[in-house]
Length: 114
Image (cartoon, rainbow, N blue to C red; front, side, top):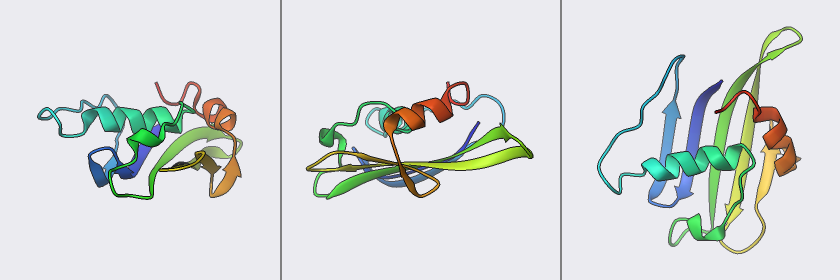
């Protein structure tokens, strides 16, 4: 389950943190408020394709961090997933602060984020 989403310099969003609880979450708001960027941020966390065009104008990079809770060997484990998208270059992925592949993000979030 995705329990927290932190976004920096992604599209119209300069900085935002969203904490999620159990159950359904609905995102509503005015046109241009950033709902699509929240969905884009989640897509990046699950291994979606990164495009430098989504970096906020004037920023050197965009960053998305997500905290997920998964069933583990000792009950519930918490994992922090990150994507960094430079305005000029290849995106990078991290799991718990360590470099990872986009395929690893996709594998870790299968069945966890829908």
